[in-house]
Length: 333
Image (tube, rainbow, N blue to C red; front, side):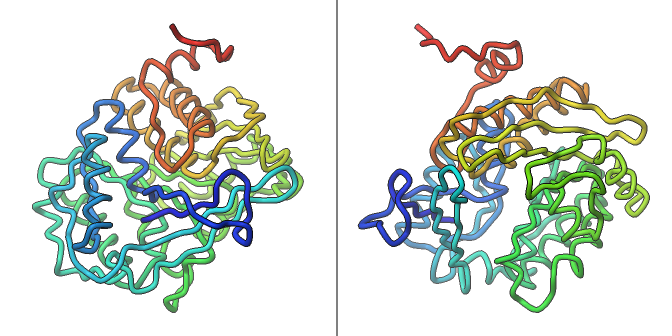
């Protein structure tokens, strides 16, 4: 997608111009993995024009393979992002109707060819929200990955403003999640996509009980027996600029908790969950240890909150430095 944002903390009504970035759920994860030297391919569709080519060049510049990214359609999907401050929340306006991606058709992609040498397939709940055809394509990809023995992960990523094509998330997502090995989501995602909600947390008041998520995770595993791990990001919103950020993994028998980072001066929170997922996939592949993978993911996503734009432009060394406790922010020279 193309992201357009007013400079600084201006409201949409104050903007005389917009800053331009590219981003989007799965693309953000792909860039994170490429930064960690993981071979990764991003599959999508952009228009065959200068804007589409600019998007592809940026992804390629980060080391993301776009071999099967299609060119076609009339326009790229757009979203407008306004940064919140203190008690004023951030705001997003989507302009994705009739985009090149939304008009993808199942016969345009050969998932057997695309996934032939893959080890991991990741998707987010934003994809099936965009259109009925993208939901069909995503389910086809998931089932192909299952057939090929590829690990499948999902970020539930509920976006109420996108589910406009005739069905709601609860009508579509369960069949897709049933074919996943790892599922990530927060409290709203679990409720709106799967009908499962925490009992003791009050998100509106910024009160998060991490122990509550063991119950939610157990319910997810009971409902979807294929799922081996449930991952939850925990965001306590003190204000739009100050969040406490952590995560947990339920592995079927225990709840593994990360440390909590107090992010007191958020630069840009968009892409925080995607950077977490990118860090988690890297950690699962590299460490082979759930706790180490979780610590890496939380640290990586904490750093993302300090970076403008959707992409998490950090290195393994920078993440590991934060994991090791280096929070001073001293100049590195």
